[in-house]
Length: 368
Image (cartoon, rainbow, N blue to C red):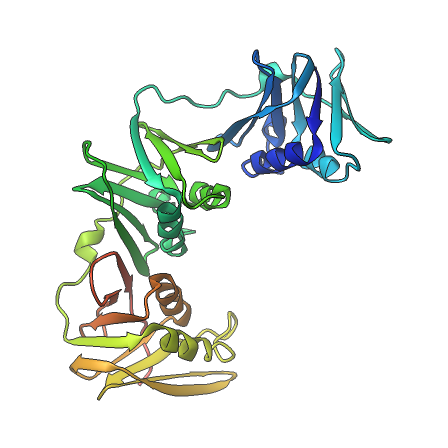
């Protein structure tokens, strides 16, 4: 194979493909980036880790067709250090590849491209289109609640529900629940599937034009995202996702309307006292249009209070500080409602109007 490429563009594309390539794998080919020429004078670049794969095409000058598999980490690092605008890549019949730009030259040995694992294909698919901006926001506003150590693998992803003109994303980790809802023009049959959080965190990085749309193709075991010239295919997680609807309490004895930014600032001010080594729940007292916040750790104590509109019973309850801040930061609204039903029931954070988000947080036992 012999190709001539624009250095800057080629480096950008390779770095994007590298995102799904593991640094270490029991299969050396999975650590590589597959580059092969096409019949129309382009190259196709692919990366795959058996769970997620990325492919894209790039216009280059093809002087000799062929294919190579180069260690992605090493190859991308070489590209970043090339001095000129043009890079020449020449691979001989012994699989020795020369990467040259100006007077700088590297050599690498290619693995056999015939042994590169084939990326999955979807035979029966359901198409769905969504705004890049909408999907990016929905992912960022739920992914923090995905479980990282749940024994049920299905809870390590975000559940998508598409029905009745709505797109809903759900994430949970046993201590909290995040739900984001948006309207959609999708008119097909109801869809339910779970996408790994790892895949979605990478999808967000590929979004470069929030005014554009993402095309999704949903199959039985895999999903394909078409975004900004890249095709990302990912396996779907299998298993029984928790019945989150039954976890959301309907009863409430106290409703708190509070300024989101002020609440976040008050809680973050407790961070010097609540560290990873000195974990301690934050005590909340909701009473008489005031929220009193305090904590005591081995480092010392903290207390503060802010005004709020409170309707209902006085409630004293404890929460993990970070869980509350994560939820409030994801609301993106000036004010929120916090629904409480005593010291042992979860808190539910919802918008003052509408139903486009819901965050549930389990309480933590606090000492008297």
